[in-house]
Image (cartoon, rainbow, N blue to C red; front, side):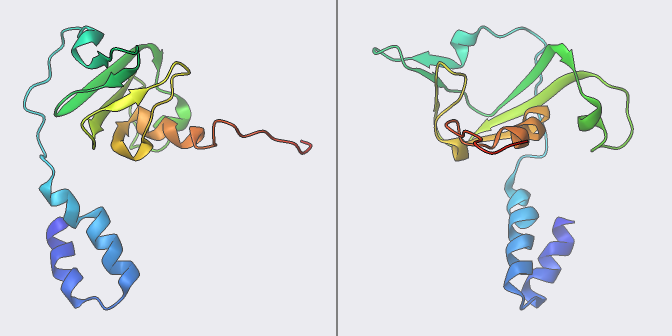
Length: 140
């Protein structure tokens, strides 16, 4: 698909199509398509959470972090988005766009554009897009 986008991009005069080709295909050519090593060992949170002198916590790691949540299976709603498969543990891949991201006590995090979530967390994040201070004042 990337190769096809390379051909279509210079031929297109439609700015929306060109933006789509860049964002959805051409930029992905630079991503590493391989996960070289997946360790099955449990990782101590101290290896990727930094606490500063004031007690603030930051998520900090290089490369990708593969997370398997073994306390809950994938939901039917999630599985309906994929080719048919049996439910498994919720699995996600995290990549930091910034060097680190602050994690707050209420389980939210700072610069939301600085972390990229794939898999279950990426899908689940869509349901959590309301602002933290949102309050519904209407009737159901």
